[in-house]
Image 1 (cartoon, rainbow, N blue to C red):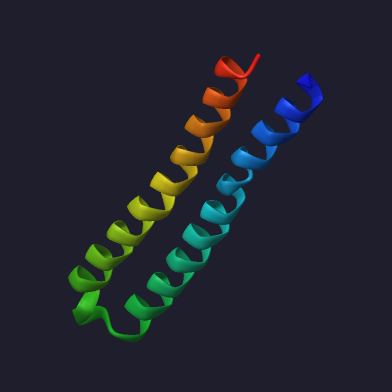
Image 2 (cartoon, one colour; image 1 turned 180 degrees about the vertical axis):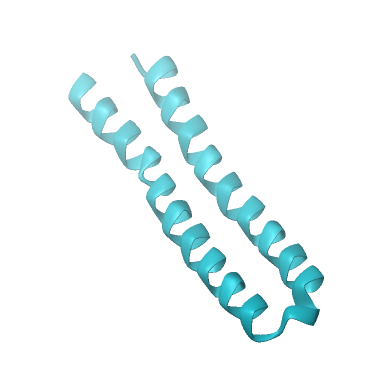
Length: 74
């Protein structure tokens, strides 16, 4: 039973991989956009920060679920 709990917690933490990849792609595209159109820097930064915050929140939710699985399903 404890092996399945560990597997479940590990799968929940894998949300961090998706968030990391998403934030990396978004940052590269934002830098490219600013290079192409410097006058839109403020708008691009606002959209980038909002998207990064939402992606990071997803990773944090996965981590919290993993911790809850470990603590409450012993």
